[in-house]
Length: 292
Image (tube, rainbow, N blue to C red; front, side, top):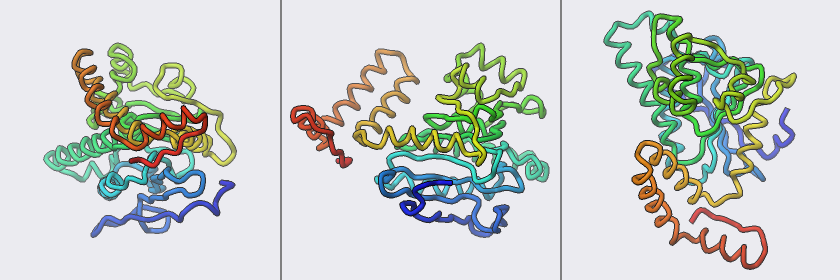
């Protein structure tokens, strides 16, 4: 149970028009909440499709795409946190029951949408954190890999298991897992379809933190939220530009990466926050950054 419920804004549902929903109350499968008080700046995306264990179906993907498009324009979002409203599950991956009803052409189009969704998460301007309190399989792990940071319960189970279903990862897994773990280890995990616990994933560097699960089943969420709270006091423009420099720099050689860093640094020089940081250092006080 959260101790600061009085400081939290209510969940804001986002419904995809013309589609049936699998959420517990028949409403939206994706809900959004902006935290307030000392957590102002943290926005949470709650995945809530219990009957399908948050599987990536048409409605789910449409709502998540719409949510991201809205939030990316909101400069008040300093950290975006993905969590599940379904106990024991983060995201069970693709909705294979729904996929069975698609033609080959429809499957190709849908997987392309999935790939676009993961790219939108990866390109989100503010830091993103996945709180993995349960199963994160196939597309569920691909969603987490698209986030900047990952926190898992030690008992969580994750893996790119597509080869065990006659498939291969198609929403970024073949690209993001090697960049996270290295080529040889990523190949081993994808070729075998192996499942890892949160503890094993942490030992390999797949997740930033692994924590013992609690009775409520939301230990990873609380650790992810604490991690978000560490980011909140920092200069938001500098953090966003740091994300750009890292992400773009990893795609090129180091000389080009240094040039990208230089361009990002130059964009940060004229900001009020940079002057505030210098003034706070000189005056020996904590800085107050405003994102300008």
